[in-house]
Image: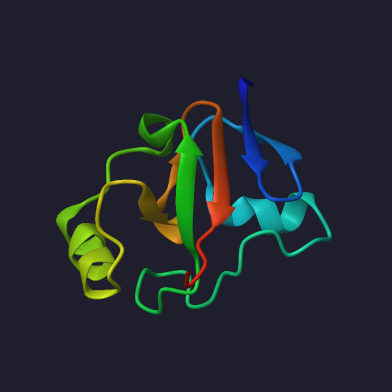
Length: 99
């Protein structure tokens, strides 16, 4: 089994997940709520993350995800819905803030 590393800021907590795992698995690997998941289907926007490193390691966003991120005002290519991502390589993310 090949493991990939997801680092979640600002705490800098590293979580190892099998390659191809959905990011929702983070909840089961740590007791801390590192990413605020809501609906888990890409409809609520609770789990918007900023990708600091490894954007390509999270898989390609589909048109529905890109449209929803645009509706949320999260354009520019560094945001994703964590519930729609699968870890294919090492990445560093942080929950998006409203600033």
